[in-house]
Length: 439
Image 1 (tube, rainbow, N blue to C red):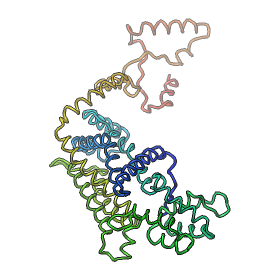
Image 2 (cartoon, rainbow, N blue to C red):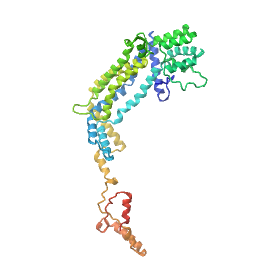
Image 3 (spheres, helix red, strand yellow):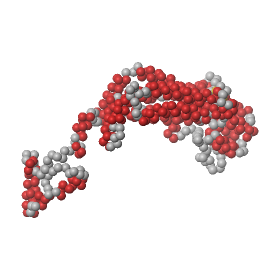
Image 4 (cartoon, rainbow, N blue to C red):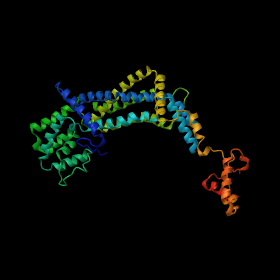
């Protein structure tokens, strides 16, 4: 898997990453004022603050989940009612009935998606910051810059960092901007960001001139900043497994990642459980339930291969989310959901009234009577055939037309004198056109 580690993320994620990068940098400097420079402590504070900022969206999402569990039996009943019916009419009626259920509970299918759509770029931007901490934390950037500039002054630095990038799965395809086999300082920093204990040792061994108090001091400082319980969290659990076997503290990170996410999944499952006696036949719901148990183990596999800083962040944010979820559930349990539903339904009705949208099915039914498909062709209608005009001489054509107009005006009083025409069996344009051919 290739990871493109940019100095700072661009594109649509740039504003999110910039804002949270500033928060992360501010927190790091705040922690440094205590005399302790630690990425782990900063990471805990950073995750708490971001989770608090996202709390309104989290409450909205969990409230929708609670509503979904409440109205799911009714939605399932609609699905069962139209099960196996693939015709357009049945599909339309099913959609209308489902919409009535959403209207009844004062919500809509997109209510649960909107918070996710907003939080998704935030979560991705946060991961990008964790992947490229030197790009956002000024004091750490200074340390990496001093090492990068010294290394770039060594002969053969390009080949060394190119090989390091390949080993560390950093894509450099678009980095050779000058075409002269050179890297910029930011490119070298991006590669150094992935360095663990062995990589730093290999750098000094390859370039002995870098073995100076300034460079080794910067490296030691970086190792200290990224150290937890004597482990460099830039290394992965798999690295420590190779070094010390499977009985080491680092392996607790993927294990705890699995346990904490399983706990979160079970709590979410309990919150959204289907009422007793109701079977959840919704294929999407069943798929989501399966993912609740699969994803924790997938995260454990990822945490085993990724650097410890990613695994630690994963655990911290899961634990904080779990605590938030418990307190939000308590809050929602003490909230009058019926009053909330009634309030939301009133808002939707008022909004549709302003837009001129019909509110009840009887109005829609009445409107449907005016559609072409609802016209009753069995009733008589004053129609004149072409042959009746053709039988008249050219001299009396005008009189015939006048008579036709007069008969049309008096058709309401004397409808029996007019020709009655039934709708053709083939109700198409050609079918109606054939009426003119009839004599």
